[in-house]
Length: 594
Image (tube, rainbow, N blue to C red; front, side, top):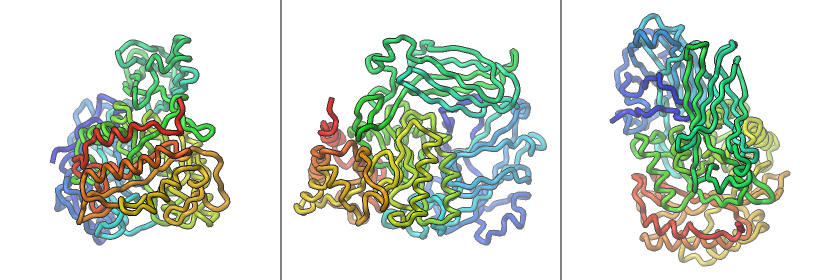
């Protein structure tokens, strides 16, 4: 199995880096004795694993679905003399769930959280050019109080639950930086003023020179300036220089959208006198998303989101794509079917997926993996990890909504429990405190508290033979009143004490039509491709005729293990003509007026 070789985070790219993906030594520690016995001192593990694939996946070379809560990794590598002249930073895209890092027998750090990225400076733990890197990961298989998404707490996956993902499942790499380097930056577009607000942070408190160069897609120079920076500075860059741009931005095509994914390139050069300390490349899109009076606007125009549910699983890699082409294929097929975006469901998207969504023009709802149950300890875990996710992915123009909670997962008593309602409110306000530029759902599906849009899940559309259910489904979708009063899955749309405030209504889960499967399941089933198209047309017609629905998310893009209700098979083979789906999706909704 070939390793992932692409630069892991293309919105924060350096030239001086080294991938650590590939074959590692590996061991199960089922008795949990590794730390006590100091396995990190003399690693000699009895298996090998292909990183960054989890041991449960076929791509890892192990493919073991049984419980192994403690696992160990070991890699030995040699650093060059040039690399040793700089600080050595270890990056991990994601490791599920608690990860301890040891370098040359010394503990460097512990990270808790299975879906967010983290890094550490390992320079002070190096003795010479020879490096022994050991990771110990603890992933409690049956714990229902940690953010786990669709990962099942039983050994055999079933129903809507899938195999677990333990340990490394996104890339691991090294970067080599000066003591003074660019630590992070935040890019906030303002299309109303034609300005990009850029907050830049460097690693030291010292007067340094920072040069910024912005170019357009045709490499024309947009802005170039240099300033003194000490720890932190803010740029306010006029992107739409000519006045006419500010009033006709759509005409000039420099705002980002699925139909026109215009990206600007940006490069930062940090200097101390004539010495170049750091060079970082990135990009951004001038994009605005907001809601007002029950309508969602993209770049100040009413915009109807036609999304598809994407659970991010792959047959051989589970939550890890085998290569970049897997991301591109999913986005391309979805766009060919007439979808303009996806809801990444119960998984945090790989940064390379987000990069291709930015580049190809594909909306993304960023969703947090939820726990199954509620506790006070869980609150701290999900909030800490959610903060890391938002900070990492803030700069991607494709992300237009954040979904911290889904279908009352982690908050099963939210309908009446004031404490769990407070948790939903805290996640909403926490998200808003970090990001004022995107929409936030409080609890997508039902039992919502405070929310920017009303996302409703409803699979009660019946089969081709159930005319009563068909009529009830179409009637429910018709008006705002009937949508708010509906009780999908027996749940209230708003939790007790909360009510409709006129937010935009979207049907954010429905469909799930299975095509003649005998080994899996769907919410409804048809016997052939022709009938699948007919049923898809019928359901979309009900949405099209709604007086209140402002967008939708169809379940789902692909089959996922036993849940075989995708428009594509698990291997990404279309079940019906993608052009036929596109013709149905290209409808003009009643709720969007020119």
